[in-house]
Every structure is written in structure tokens, then in C-alpha cells.
Image (cartoon, rainbow, N blue to C red; front, side, top):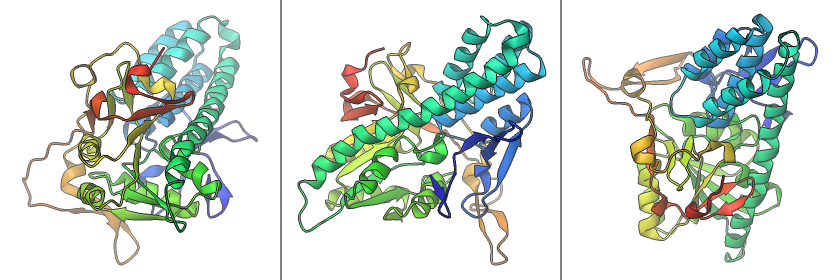
Amino acid sequence: MLVNDVPYRSIWRNQKNGSVNIIDQRWLPHEFSMQQLSSTNDAMVAIKDMWVRGAPLIGVTAAYGMAIAMAEDPSQDNLQKAGKFLKTARPTAVNLFWAVSKMQTELIKIEANKRASAAMALADQMAEEDVQTNMAIGKHGAKLIADIAQTKTNSEPVRILTHCNAGWLATVDRGTATAPIYEAHEQGIPIEVWVDETRPRNQGAALTTWELLHNHVPHSLIVDNAGGHLMQQGLVDICIVGSDRTTATGDVCNKIGTYLKALAAKDNGVPFYAALPKSTIDFALDDGIRDIPIENRSEEEVTHIQGLNQNNEIVNVRLCPDNVRALNPAFDVTPRHFITGIITEYGAHRPDQLTA
């Protein structure tokens, strides 16, 4: 997608020296910077400390981490050691475990002296597949938006609510929840996106608005608690969110606050969709509330907020009194009966229609 009308991906390989590079998302929207991943530890830190985030991008970053590990030491012992190390980065995003396991399964078949080049080629392939997957998600989801547009008069926009950032910054390119939005916009369908700020890390305010702005998509930033009110007023036509892990039965684990949006959507008759690659579906799980581990992150993410001061310096400021405790679950689970449909690269399905 575009940054200042220049195309970028969230992770890419330098064509001259083969290095793996990422957009460092910690400083957006105030500073656009990039980092090179030079070691397995770099990849692990990038995932754990959220230089990159979003289930698909975490998966691809882990794949490149495995490739870098094979360049460091292509032995079978390091293949297992590096995989175990990377899997500790974040517990909820299933794509992390899927990507590492896929790399291990494929690379174990290859002679050690050929493993490094094969690993990098496989990571490149997984990155490209992510882009194609998201393009397909976009086409399937845009059909839903187009159907709603047919009911509008006088070029009234389709109003779409999204939560957190399941945009191109959460994938290699295009995004999951934003893929239908970009596709609809490019098809000329009038749309307006309501962007939840998404406390505590404000990925909606910081990231989704930034990428929509650079790609010229009409949008407005709203506080997290405004979604239900907008639905009551008839100002939301469809909700599209992403997912970090979805069960075989259609329970959707996504950024904290998603469940509340689904409750409001159900109460107001607003269709609620999750957009995700099939690799995000964990077919080993049936009950998301019981079985999906929920990551608890730093209290400081809740007690402090990052922004730009009057001197154009990025600073953290405290929101509450000293010594206040905070609880910070990063995700929640929306049960299947609140989900209208799940959009994958294979189409839009009811939650009970998912197949391995």
C-alpha cells in the first residue's frame, strides 16, 4: 500500500543485499522508520515488543526469523531451538505457531548445507502468499459492501466500523479487515470508515487512520465507546474486524473490545464479520473462551499513553495517579453466535461452515 504515494510492504527483503526489513510500527503515526532484522533475536524482539503486530505479519516475521536462524546455523538442533525460541514471543496469535511449524516441517527434509537458502526462499513464498490471500479476502468482502451499497440512495456511503488495526500494517500488504475496504474504495463504492481508537495501544488511532489517510480512504476516528451509539442511530451498516485466532467452531479472538462491538451489533441488527486468512483458524480448538490463551501485557500500556508534545517529540505521559494498578488483557473472544460471517480467501462463510 501507499505511504506518501510510494508503495511499501510491512516486511520485505532488500533486493540488493537480501536483508530483511520491517516498518517499525512503535513510532507511527508520528515517525515513519524502518529496521533491519539481522538475527533471530531481532525477529523475536520485533514480535514480542510489537515493532510488528497483527497475526499474519507476526507469522511472516517468524518465518523470516527462522530463515535468519538457518543462515546463522543450519543444523537440525538449531532448527528446533530457533523454533522453540520464536514461539515464546507472543502466545495468542496462532499464525506465529503455524509459520514456525511450517518452516520446521519443510526444512527438516532438506540437507543442512542447502537449508539456509531454502529457508529464505520459503519465507519469501509465505510473504507473497499472504499478499495474495489478502487480495482474495478483499474481493470476497467487497461483495458484501457492494450489496449494501445497492440499498443506498443519492450516493450515500456504506458506513463500516472496524476495530484495532487489521490493515496492511498487520499483514505483509493489503490487510484483512481493511482488504474489503480498499477493494470497495478502488471499485468506486462510496464508503466511510469509523475507526475505533482501540485502547490501550491505540492501534486504530495511530495505525488504521494513518494508513487510510495515506491511501485516501474516507474515515473518521471515534472513541472506543461510541460504536454502540452510532449503531443505535443507524450510522453503521457493517462491522469488519480481524482475528488473531479463530476456533474450528467460529469463535473469534481479536483485540480487546471486539466482543463489546459484537454485542452492540447483535442488538442493533448490524452484520458483524471477521476477516482472516485460513491459517488463523485453529482447527484443534472448539471453545475459544476456554481454550485460547489470552496475553496479559504491561500495566504501563494502560496507565500511560504515547503522543507528540508541543516540541514534536514522542513522549509517554501518565493518565492516572501514581501507584494505580492496571489489568491489561490484550484480547477477548467473541462467541460464534454473535458472528454473522467469517471472510477468508475462500469466501464468506457462516461460523459453523468452517472446514479444514
